Length: 178
Image (tube, rainbow, N blue to C red; front, side, top):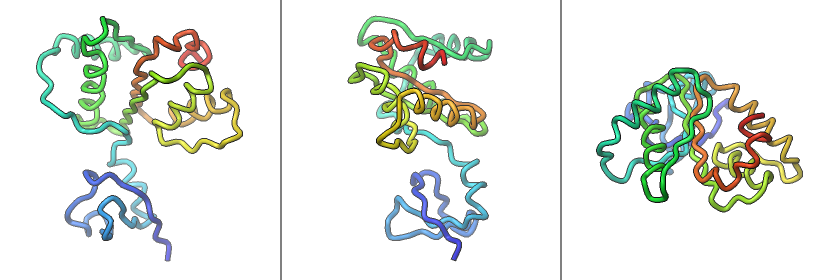
């Protein structure tokens, strides 16, 4: 009947189902969306794989301001450096969540843990998986890099947090520098 099923995060659903033309189902993770409103929902629901912060984020306002300044200056790649355990990952994830919470239009924030990655194929498959992109079994790493690039270029604002990238930094020219 023209109704499609799509998975929506619970936080995106409004309790007043009529407002969004969303019919709640028994499964709280799934809603039936009328195709005529799906575009509206897509624009209103931030695309992310970030979970909620598990504890209050205190301090680091200077670091947040520096990251803001770097991105405001049109830098496409910002690297956070510091000793292990200094909170680089937590800072990056907090920054990504802050962008989503500010309600930036079409904002996407994706986190990809690269700690187990050792080669180009593993890197691009990890990023594609983190971004919930469909990954054909028989696809080359180069084709997947292009698919990721197309997905990223189709969005207004995307923050892609590549955690532990230092382990595969030698692949930067084939991936983030592509």
